[in-house]
Image (cartoon, rainbow, N blue to C red; front, side, top):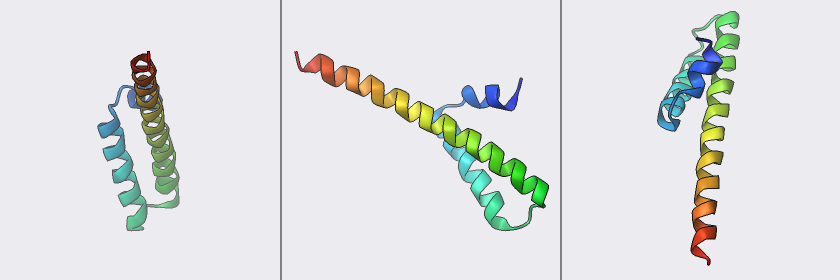
Length: 70
């Protein structure tokens, strides 16, 4: 299973926790350049997963709000 596919299966909370962990690793200053780039790439993927899940939730709420206006 690819990392991107693995991240698509994460809940918002799991993706946010992973993203927080990546930020902490990057801020520690203990990673090599290659490790920092890899952590940054993974953080971007996790951030996109969070954004996608938030967008999905917003769409669902908009549908419910629209349904309630009838």
